[in-house]
Image (cartoon, rainbow, N blue to C red; front, side, top):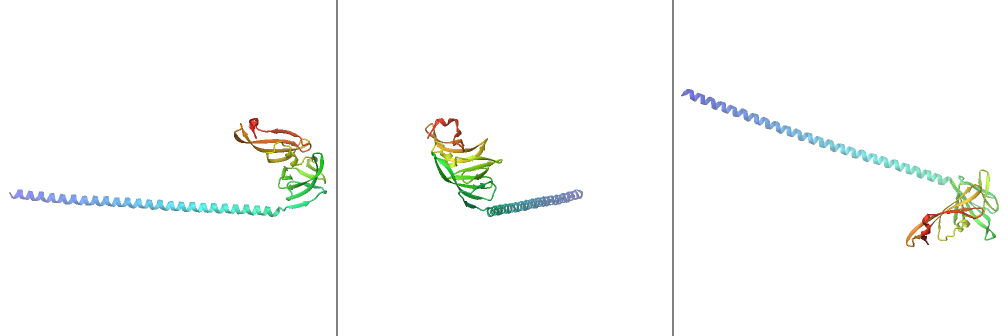
Length: 250
C-alpha cells in the first residue's frame, strides 16, 4: 500500500514537471514569433523609407535638370536675340534718288533701296517708270507698281535702261515686272512669286500664280500655274498648270 502511494506521488510529480516544461517551451516559441514579426515590420518600414527617399531624390534631380534645361534655352534665346539685334544694327537702309546716274545693285551688299526712272514702251508710247531696286543678303528686288521680281544676279542701271550682269555679260530687261504680270490673261490670278533669271542668252521671268476656280462647276479649288515670260520681248514662252484644269471654270 505504501508502495502504491509512492508510485502515485512520483507520477503526479512527473506530470506536473512535464506541464511546466511544455508551458515554458510554448511561451518561448510565442515570444520568438512576435520578435520575428516585429523584425519584418521594421524591415518593411525601412524599405518604404528608402524608397520614399529615393523617389524624393529622383524628383529633386529631375527638377534640377528641368531648371538647367530651361536656363540653357533662355541663354540660347538671349544669344540669338543679341545676334539678331547686332545684325539689325549693322544693316542700314539707304535710299538713293537718281534718274540719270548709273548704278549697280548687287546681292550681299549693305542693305539699300535705290529708286531709278527707267524708260520703257507701253502700247507703243515711250514713258518713264519709277523702279525700286532693293538689295538684301542674297537677292535683288525689282519693284514696279507693287509688283516685285527677285533675282540672284547684279542689276545695272545705265541711266535709261535696266540690265542683268552675269559672268561679265549684260542681258537687257526691256519688260518690267508689272508689265510681265499684266501679260497673264487671267485678271483673277493672284501673284505668288516672280523670279528673274538668265536662261541661255535671254532674261526670263518665272511667274507663279494661284487662282480660285470651280472643279466640275461645283467644288471650289485652287489652281496653281507657272509662266515663263521673256523679259526682252514680253513673249509668254510657256505656261504650266494641272492637267485637269480644263474641268474647272471661274
